[in-house]
Amino acid sequence: MNITATLLAQAAVFALFIAFTVKFIWPHMVRAIEARQKTIADGLAAADQGRRSLEQSNRQAEETLQQARSRAAELLAQAEKRAAELVDEARTAAREEGGREKAAAKAEIAQEMSRAREQLRDQVASLAVAGAEKILRREVDARAHAELLEQIKRQL
Image 1 (tube, rainbow, N blue to C red):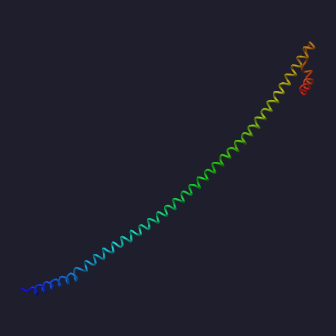
Image 2: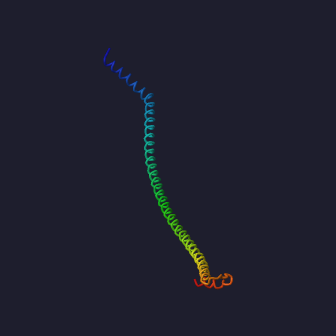
């Protein structure tokens, strides 16, 4: 056998193998590779979109958190202000109540003093009558001298 004929036959078979591969096998492989490339590209695009969406969500979450903190600080300041107002109102009410109680106590003291003076006048009048009775050594009629006793009371 001739080496040249063998080489030519092998080259022809190899050419037929290449033609068969290019005609029947290569298109399936190219489609599979393209589908795989498309799947990978879609996955990368989805991952990139997901990363951007995550970043945007993180920014929104941070903004929302900042707004919530700001609102909480405002509410806390309002609550502290209202508490201070309530304390001031309570102090004012306590002062007013203390003033009313003080005025009532003064009025009660004045009334008690008036009663005590009246009782003291009555006792002084009785003592004066008793003293006069002892001095005169006779009995004094209280009904007859009621006007005199009233004058003594008014003078005291």
